[in-house]
Length: 130
Image (cartoon, rainbow, N blue to C red; front, side, top):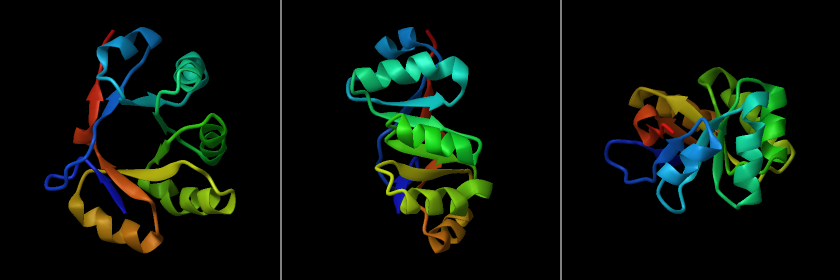
């Protein structure tokens, strides 16, 4: 299991952006955290065209499939979609890792038993303003 933002495991941060202009305010080799929606497709496509690693936060099964097709490195889902997202990723052999957003350490065991790729705590996501 991969951990992002756990209090005693060192990990990289994700940089939550809401515009292409925000990218210049992120460190080199950053992973961009982008909310998946049609309005953000320009940001997602820009990142892909420029080989910038992306983590797409999705809300449903269709968006999971879109995120993979768009070349996301990480697909972030809420806990309710954990098992479904992981099964889809395994069925279609996604390159992306499935990450589940969590707030408490006691959620880790349940998600490990479901076989998810990893977890991300909210402190691993840094909001960037333009």
